[in-house]
Length: 340
Image (cartoon, rainbow, N blue to C red; front, side, top):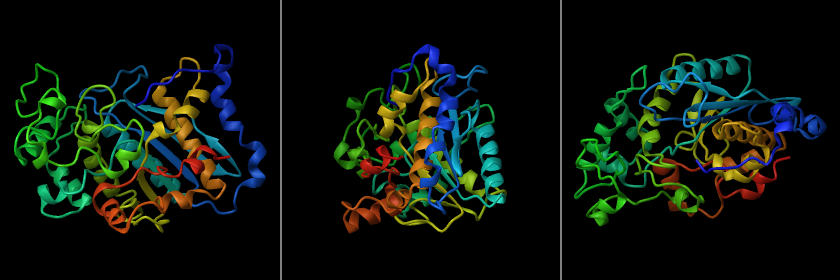
């Protein structure tokens, strides 16, 4: 994730999160009578191979919940040490909101699809969800975060000529088909595109093929996509949640719970301005983003984001809806940044 520095003094930091919860009191009359979703959750995922420290830290799993209930209320961000615990708690959280007749939007901060053509190459079908299933059959992710993501990355690389497309590993790790540096890959013309349509437009977005080093998302994807499949199949929410845009199209979904890809760095300036002194960046990002999506929804502006940007061609929309996905809010900067 993009780095940010705090503009909030230490004197004010103890009250900052409470103030963020209260700042919507003056706009309650502006809230539309029926937002698309009543609860907005933003999740920062992690590919750690061991449980995160007991003391909250960066580069771990965090999420924040913003609820529209007259005013907008944002909970204290949650910190979770393992992916198994996170999936169990998130399924319970989503189910609780749905059982209370509250529609839910959940955003995860890793790419939901690979560049066009990858799913076809690996599974025989140009379908991101089929590729999710392919990965779920191969990824082993234990309760203690131990996982085999590099084995699966090596299997993907073996499906293409040359060396790559995945890259990025510690130099001492014995994965000779996964190069340490991107420049060590070969026969790139016979391999998939470096970036998806949305990654090209998202400032600072990393390639899906980078497995390690600062800002990488490749490992989060390999572990995150099977996790999303397990989440939607959890008996507590199965049949009540849909993946945007693969199961919904680029339109306002009918599902009671919708899971979408988000990119918290779209709001890097807002996060920088509202981050508390000494607050972990991950915590600030999920808190500010959940609040922003809730405010936008409450003011009637969320539907435009779910319909996708108008500049996509019909062919690009098809690719987004079937293979690559899209970052919720990308291409709608005026809506996202000007949420009340």
